[in-house]
Image 1 (cartoon, rainbow, N blue to C red):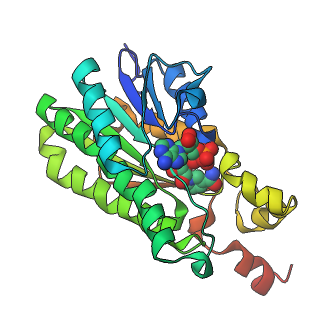
Image 2: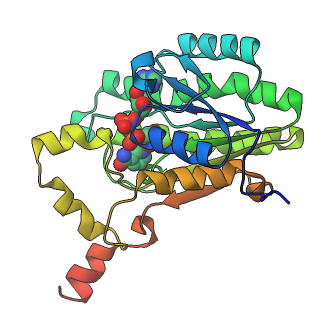
Length: 257
Ligand SMILES: NC(=O)c1ccc[n+]([C@@H]2O[C@H](COP(=O)([O-])OP(=O)(O)OC[C@H]3O[C@@H](n4cnc5c(N)ncnc54)[C@H](O)[C@@H]3O)[C@@H](O)[C@H]2O)c1
């Protein structure tokens, strides 16, 4: 009997497939038996990945994103699962946000994710099944900086719940993963400014370390598999314990470390 955790014969579309978490997503879904369609801004970002197809768009442009995805669906059909993983932030705190920054981080992280997934949700509903996983962030659950990005990531939770509630009757599931800090190229610009920065990150994490890209990917495989067939509209932190409580408070105030 096939394990419900396997994805043999299924196709998954993964956005931001060329990024740090994206590459682990590709590997994890391939290891679980799925065919992978990689999506990213440029073909060069997908080079060397074990994928059977690709779709290219700039997610900051919702019209172009919707157009690219719609064309892909017409030519190749509807994937069984989607992982909406592309994301971007540069504005670290409110002092770095203005109208333009706010609009641009909402465009990439929320509006673009909607434009990418909305045609797929419609096609999945017509077909009668499908699963979506949105890679949000712990920033959607409490404030850890990056205000505009955080608003967008919180918006993804509302959107996933809308899909879960309104499209559940047509067999479409939608769930959200909220990673804590993961050492990927998304951290390169911060580490270039301060190479010792990761030493400041670790004391916040109950597991004493950052989350690995593969730990995020494994959760996405689970959500996309039949093992999660009864799970929709949920939010799963994969955060090494960050949102469980305030370890720094316990250490500094109560344990006197
Ligand atoms: N790394 C972390 O600490 C962390 C923590 C929580 C959540 N996340 C989320 O995980 C996801 C993956 O992040 P990562 O750490 O692998 O970052 P990354 O920078 O390594 O990868 C991001 C991917 O998104 C793609 N992308 C960015 N802007 C795009 C655009 N305008 N159009 C199309 N594609 C675009 C990039 O090309 C890249 O493939 C993101 O949504 C990010 O917000 C990351």
